[in-house]
Length: 234
Image 1: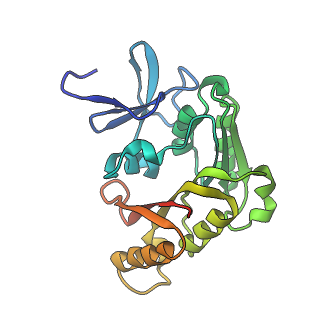
Image 2 (image 1 turned 180 degrees about the horizontal axis):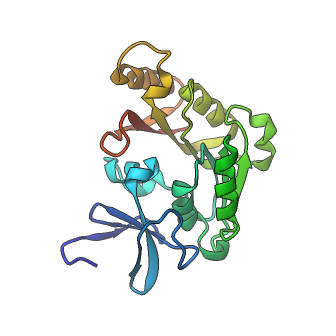
């Protein structure tokens, strides 16, 4: 396991080994996106690549306790902009576990049919994962899947108006004191004038008017022109 690398559990299913992240594989023997598989104390883990996951990068870059960025195992969470399933799979490892032993529910929304195909294939062996083809802005089309508010929400959509979309989702779905994470891509906000710094500063001001801004994490080096904002609903 590497004599010089300190192993720190972030949850029962997530390990931080130096600057590496690992999650217990909820579908043993299967790598989702070609990631490394490795056993720790006889239990198979998958490497969580922070270069392919903004949440993974945030766990390594946060100045606070990384476990704060993770939802509670067994809870219901909402992920907007689920993509092809890299982050989703590791989140499922933590939230649901093998055969959904934690009884979690991960509602994963994406607008791209190709992404939905990948997510649907992933869900075949990962109960608790609910793929949804939908626009992050059009809650009425899929919001019925979340009859109750959630305590954790993540957004990673590369379209203009990311902060507005995020705050609308917070109002509609996030519970009081719930944690929301916004992955903001500066290049998608080029309708705004100014540098990346200006765009992130504008986002900070907009978020701070409505939610408690816990942290602004710069993801440069993992995802250039990206920042992760961690908020709590008041």
